[in-house]
Length: 179
Ligand SMILES: [Zn+2]
Image (cartoon, rainbow, N blue to C red; front, side):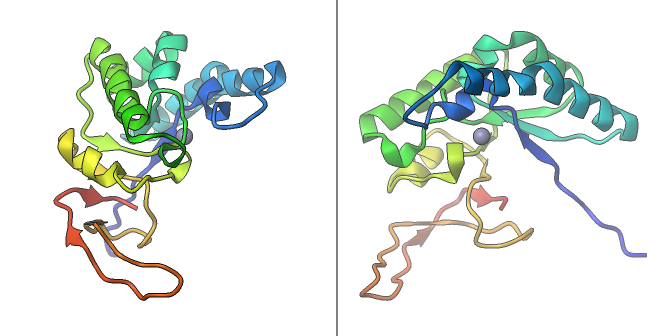
């Protein structure tokens, strides 16, 4: 039987998963808390049982709201990646807001000793400049886009395409996409 490699990655969003919604209610926030109270401990237990390393993408808001499960992820030897500050889609932010969000999340990660190699955008959303910011902040890989199933590839910067004109490809980014 040929060897296979699989990649398991989880978003530990907790309450922040709702902040892209217009109307955030206490019930929604408690549903998010489930991830911190039940979801992460249960997943960590499963990964430990099978001795599987994984990656968790964790927003800064979650790191600061739920430090114990976040610490448990690191103590178990798993990777933590950048997942914005409060899970707001970058395409809904101005460039200044997107940059501020990027840096606020990096600061949260830095306080728990993480210099992330990977980025995953909240809700899989990208603005026109997201990939450039990912390059600028020195990430090795992104895991937001879906132009392939399991083959890593390089996303492009500066594509020109509309419904009336076909794709003119921009330059390939040095950042790896792990779809
Ligand atoms: Zn998420």
